[in-house]
Image 1 (cartoon, rainbow, N blue to C red):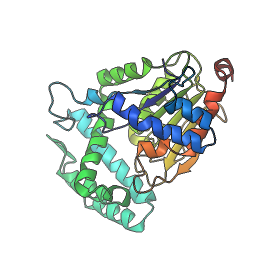
Image 2 (image 1 turned 30 degrees about the vertical axis):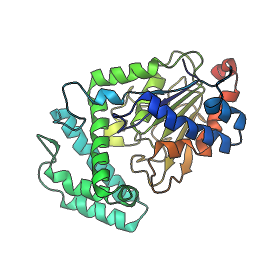
Image 3 (image 1 turned 135 degrees about the horizontal axis):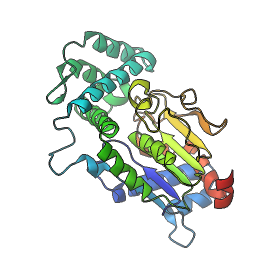
Length: 313
């Protein structure tokens, strides 16, 4: 069992737990170091001596590559296709409302107004959504990737989130991967992107207190799509979580609502959702989030509290 468990987000199906740990752990260690705790930074990544902080990635990306499919974007069941279309529209509406650049807001709004016809077809996201997806792929945070790469990333994000929220078997398998790493020694659970939804639901399944939950670039605030489909309903702060820190880049289109407090009631002071960071040209990048003091500081604090005190807080 691990003291820190990280849950990855969308688009990791061609990787593994090992490759993601090699990427995430140095960045999390750096965030802890920047926050002024080099002692814990070394224990998370560099040291292999006794006392090392066991940190693991709960990997589930391979579950999106079913044996009978060629890839994650093949033909979608109707309920997944319908949800994917609605999710694309809601994300676009968020960008049109709060995008940081006038040009991006105008471009996406025009695409939404121009979208006509069926939003889905036999191949999943239909012709009616193409102008919307094309507009989203050209906004500043996505344009840096190139339009073709950005378009594929958007499609993957929309489909994987929709699949997780509609496929109970897939959901159960993902949750089992996370649960297998959580035990009495676990002090920190970190989820990025879709992984923040997974981590939130996993936190509700805990049988013991968890000192810290961290959500990064989270779509939990997408009210009509994600918020109304997370479990349990109605959504509340997980009762055994002692501190929940939500971190978002203002240009992260996945993090639709920067203030989760108004949507997730719970004990006052548990949910802290005022942390915003600047991840530059790649606002949704998990490693960039992990390398920030806004993440490293709370993680170091959770690690510094003895397990019995953290549980009784």
